[in-house]
Amino acid sequence: MMKKQSNEKVKKAMIALGIKEETAELEIVNLQNSLSQEVSTQKEKLFSGKYQKPLVLAFLLAVFNQLSGINFVLYYAPEILERAGLASGESLFSSIAIGVINLIFTFIGIALIDRLGRKQLMYIGSIGYIISLAMVGWCFYASANSTLLLIFILVFIASHAVGQGAVIWVFISEIFPTKVRAYGQAWGTGTHWVFAALITLLTPTFLDSEIGIFKENPYPIFYFFSAMMVLQLLFVAFMMPETKGVSLEALAKKLSKKE
Image 1 (cartoon, rainbow, N blue to C red):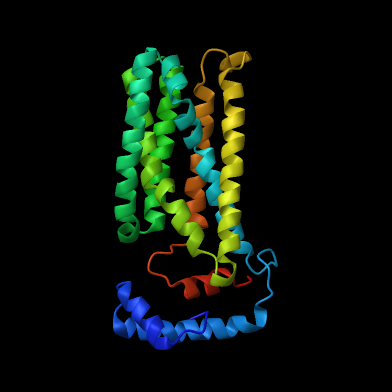
Image 2: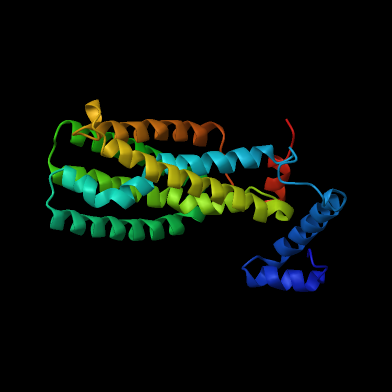
């Protein structure tokens, strides 16, 4: 449509994607209206102010993704599990189990994202995060059985794969209108990996710290991540829109409105 292709070609493309013919014709009209409204604003920039809400949503979702501690756990799993009392060989085997659970529940998240919706998966993931991270912290604090700690780490990985892991890239691609989508996705992705680097660099300094409570027991790190996931749950409840079943044009119009 943007390259001035014929309506017939656009309709064929939509039908090939599984959209019913009547719905495709209605969507073509919506697309034409949307594009005609954008003609006079082609020079708008991502940071012009019009897209403040999707920018904030993408930023917060990416930040919370890393404040869950997912990359910290994935990158330093063997060391974390060794501190829980597992032998080196056992901790490496447990790291393989983490990868397998991550793979399985990622596929479950993919299967559910268009059935339950983005917000529902984020609710499930956030609650799973809060419980599992708090329990991992408690296992370290109480010197609980290492098998119990591994179980809660696996619950944490499953919660991530079903929730944030499945939702983040879909959601970020949906909340920006067509003309700035590439820049918007770059903003969200860049935020994600900058905070991934920060979390991955900073948390090991606490893990290896010689200061106070961090010296022998890393439980405060997991309590911190759990607290951050409480904030994520509030973000999902009060700020995050549901994008399931909403056309990109309707969503862009809603999120670009100035309050």
